[in-house]
Image (cartoon, rainbow, N blue to C red; front, side, top):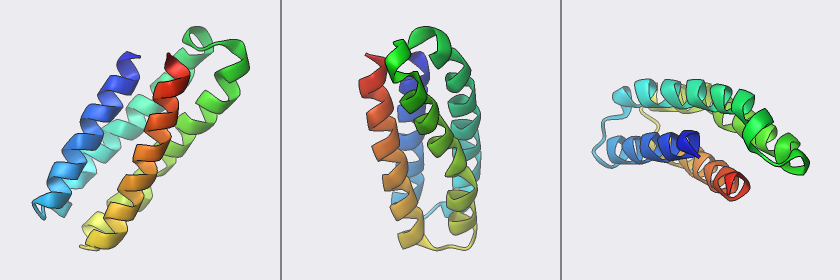
Length: 101
């Protein structure tokens, strides 16, 4: 659950950066999200009910996998694309949160 809280925190930070047109700064938060998501996948093996582990692992991979696309979109100054990827992250984090309960 700590991992989900950290992902949510980082997600909000990215939202703030997007709102303030600080797209160049998205990289760091997105990179940390990928690291946290990868680590969570390892922890999910212990903390998540066995029947939910595959889905939890898939969602962790999804969040980690969105790092490069959001970083590239933000670096290119593509705000709409960055927002769209940010929304994908939100959906995956929301599902993870449900599984972690």
